[in-house]
Image (cartoon, rainbow, N blue to C red; front, side, top):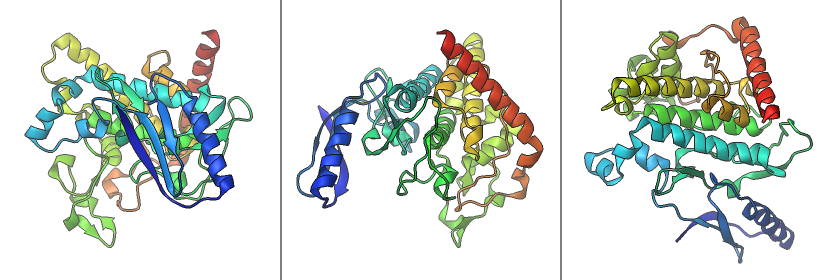
Length: 341
């Protein structure tokens, strides 16, 4: 079985069609255990279709965001509620992204990393899909985060600040999106929830939101940073992940889930310079590299969300030095480990 992705119905020139075929040929040659294999395409008339392998368990969002008991039972939530399964999904996704960024002859930016584009096979191993609509970037030198300006693409709630600030989009933009997915994976909640009664002129009154379960407008990353700053990091974790585990297993789960949260906070830093490479993220998750305490000054909030005064953290200037020192330490340790392998 296969799944088909529609890229839209547009009329393009013969040169554009040739370029499309060339890019698809390149993407079809990519083979990695954590990428959904591109099997074919259609470029007839105005039709642009990509054909991928079909994965039995569908997309991650259908497992994380079930609204009813019946739906939860249908999707087998008990399996996704095992902390080690979610951790493995995080690692699998990181491996796929790291391969696209650094393991290919041509750097590939995904540009739409989200739970809907993370597919699960019959054993809940994760594979990235829809990278066929991403932009191919020629990597000029090793370690060069080649910059590119492209038309706006991606999904609100996962898009990095640079999309909206007219700044260059790089592989660090994918890192930001991955960090947002990590928070949802650990918390079992969507990153933003807007209740119609709380929206006024496109803005949300977050002063009324004390806890995400209240069901009113809120922004999960800001709330999570606040909890972490108060020493309540475990409040961020989906409580189902720590249910029905013995004491030893709970200790392992707690340590691993806190590691995921800290990595997520590094990934969603507003300044791309402070975000780690995906290869470094992978080393962190595989416990080859220590994860320093992340900065919690999340100044970036989507324009639909207002930051309440209670979520004000130290200015970026006051902690920029320590943040950069931590980042340099992470990169140096990661580089040393990679060179020794």
